[in-house]
Amino acid sequence: MIPLTMPVRRAFPALALPLATALLTVSCATAPPPAALTFTRPVVLLGEVHDNAAQHALRLRAFEAWLAQGARPALLMEQLDRHRQPQIDRLLARQPQPSADEFVAEVVTDRAGWDWRFYTPFIALALRHGLPIVAANVPRDEARSVMRQGLAAQGFDAAVPPDIGSSLARSVLDSHCGMLDEATAGRMALAQVARDQFMARLVEQHAARGVLLLAGNGHVQVDVGVPRWLNPATRARTEAIGLLERDGGMRAGSFDRVVYTATQPREDPCAAMRQGAPIRVPAASAPATR
Image (cartoon, rainbow, N blue to C red):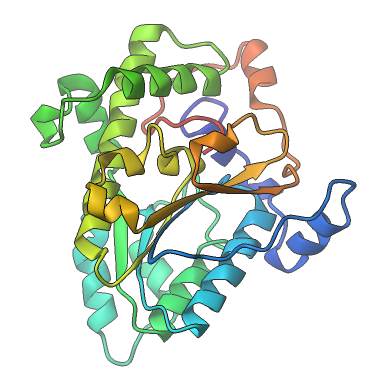
């Protein structure tokens, strides 16, 4: 993220390790290997640090195991912007069915910030098992409108509990190396709220069949993220799982359950900013650990 145009944890996708070697990397590290990842409720909000290859490998294995047990959830993906949903639905109805690579090539026109080697295997499983694939992200232009005009102007709930707004604003400040002013951080936090609210709406729509939401850890925090916007009945059927790096700084208490992995090797984006790299307000704000 030099300049700042995306969350810090997305800034260096080229550093990500291949999935095939990720688990070996973690298990050979000095830290203990991560615990097995399993799903115990029909609605799963599954976090990630976006560039952590070991976490993606763990999540994929858990998804495969869940499907093998008979689960058929809707796959909700932060990595897909919601205006792509009509195109996604046409692809899902196509005969013969597209491959996962063809799906991504047609739907994802802007790959900035996402390493699709990590997400294409999830799409392949969804296609193989006939699962709904749901675009769960509020795109950048809509997020900017929220920052300018507020949540209500864009059809979101403006009654944001104070603890959510203040916590997200602090996270935005932290993720941008303390180089944003508080007013800007507050506006960027509103964009984050819009995304959380939209993801929660989709979870509610698909909860009856089951849900797997793939999103950054910040979105699945029980205290400030998607779970705060679910109705009590859906929340009772939901588990929010954080996949955290051992020195990542996020609190285990912000999730129903956590799985720790080693930290993905990456450069320090703050170092370059302190040396005078330009700062632009990102189109999509998010804490660094998302």
